[in-house]
Length: 81
Image (cartoon, rainbow, N blue to C red; front, top):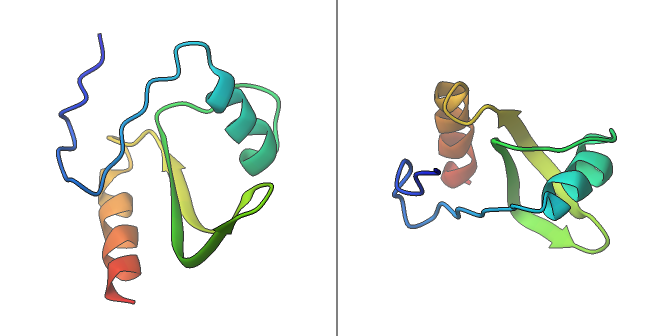
């Protein structure tokens, strides 16, 4: 089971990738390895564009809950801009 209400902020998007299609794509195209990216966050600033791969990446990390303090700081800095 997955609890999608853990981060109930309306700016947070929750996705379930049961077939690992997106997780494999993110691992390869953004993180640069063959595998599956899961329980991760990727922050893009206001200048980000999604061409073939979204960029520029401002910050990323995981696990989300384990990195929540860093995520909060990175989000705060991003939202100040």
